[in-house]
Length: 101
Image 1: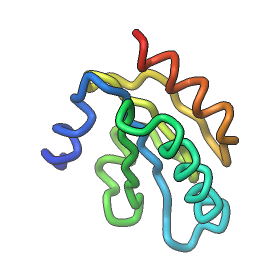
Image 2 (image 1 turned 90 degrees about the vertical axis):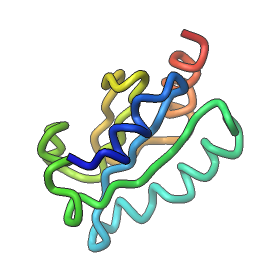
Image 3 (image 1 turned 120 degrees about the horizontal axis):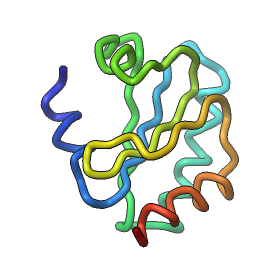
Image 4 (image 1 turned 120 degrees about the vertical axis):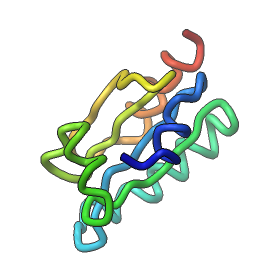
């Protein structure tokens, strides 16, 4: 497994991982949503994108069966998983719960 990925998700601040593929239309719609989330929550969170076609080992390890899927990690543990296009308000709410805890 990718050591850099593990280092990133082992953070004590929430890390939102967007699992996507270049050919996935709904995945493309996640980008502006993620920008909005990041612009509001700023340095309290980190957002990374993982291409499932280029990182099949990571996708398999976290049981990513459909895309887009967004996963919130904190201290290396999966805290929350949302399958499909997620609205910004819902993502912000989930992340806020993990910022304060």
